Length: 326
Image (cartoon, rainbow, N blue to C red; front, side, top):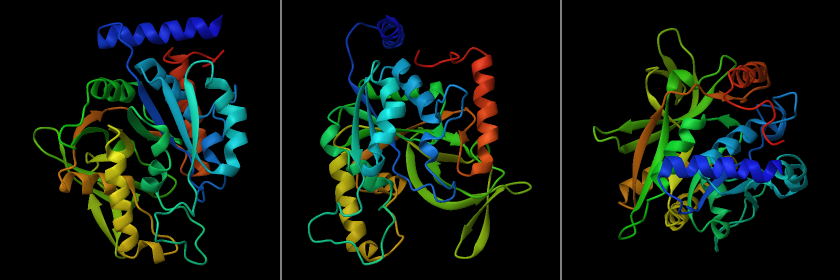
């Protein structure tokens, strides 16, 4: 009874926002295959509430409210049962669920894994692992980041009408203020975004080591620390795409491997970099929607108490129910 009632509430929310009864198919692609080396474990399914819910539960809950009707988890094959028994079993009554596996040896023809390589090939490779499962417009998020309900509403509003023309994908990105995405416990990776006066992404640069500074943030490059203003718009791997981008990302991944990436033991092909290549090649436009939400995430174990307290506050304010799924 509760499942039917919840679906009804979700569907009513969608119709009232998008202005009609027509069903819109949108998929939420969740990147959850990371190794969690800095965190020290599977942070994607580490509970943050007394009811055993994960950060990922809140993202899925928000996405369903915004109109997404399918969720695809990109995970390691060996973690399938853990995901099915936890978050998978919780959400199956409310949304279609599927699983894709990011595997080290899943490479294009002509390439092979170098001896000693154990690290996956990055977020672009992860997205490609779901190519056969995603046929509708889709969004991409990280499993261990809290994005806020507003982000999913903006993604849904963009994707509901998005159609590629002449092979060009009208994509989008949710941008965040850098100051609201940093941790006190170490460095983070963020995509520094250059947005034009019309609100479209012109360039994105992956900064793999950003820390808090006294007056600005700082990022490390070639052994030197550089200033990065706190009001900089950054990417948190929260994108909206049409299915055509899979072919574009795949071509870019092949180029990455051919340029020498296949011979490296730790090099990765990052999704923001693939997005920038699509923009440069005229294969996509990327509308940037700025979110004022505060980021909550668990890059490090020391981040968890803050995330637990922040989510608890949101529940107490009535923004989320005490129990998301029952």
